[in-house]
Image (tube, rainbow, N blue to C red; front, top):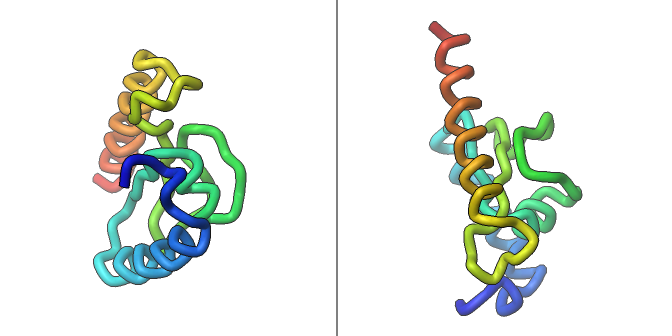
Length: 98
């Protein structure tokens, strides 16, 4: 696809079901949605970038803004900061487990 506008809500929901099944099967501790729209459609809630209390398929959820150049609401610096936050979040989970 050339952009999110080419994916219908029903396609997202079907994809979310498949994604949830895979997450339940492979059981990652953390998943990251890249893009707020996909997260909103898959999880049915509006949220900002970062970690979320809501779990998806049993995994912790982290959301970062879309990395698409078309995403004018978030600067490159904001996206890089979100990725650093994700890295720190995962490091904190690992240190809490050891």
